[in-house]
Image (cartoon, rainbow, N blue to C red):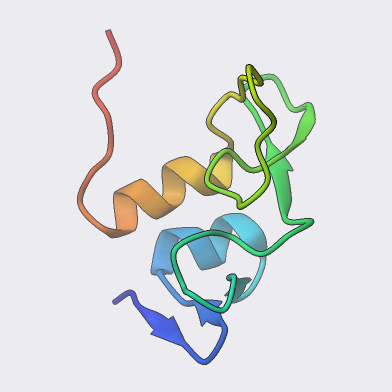
Length: 79
């Protein structure tokens, strides 16, 4: 099960990765400001699918970003 409830995303994988319902921006299209998650290797990073991204900034997909993609059936293939 997945979806937006109030201002939180409640996908099974995302909830497990975050440790609870994940806060989203009012439009429901991005993780809320300040949400972070580990990347591969364990380093904490602000999420790639967050609202804030500077010009020319690159972010890795975090465990939470990948969990969300899994919840909505869009998990990328690893090469």
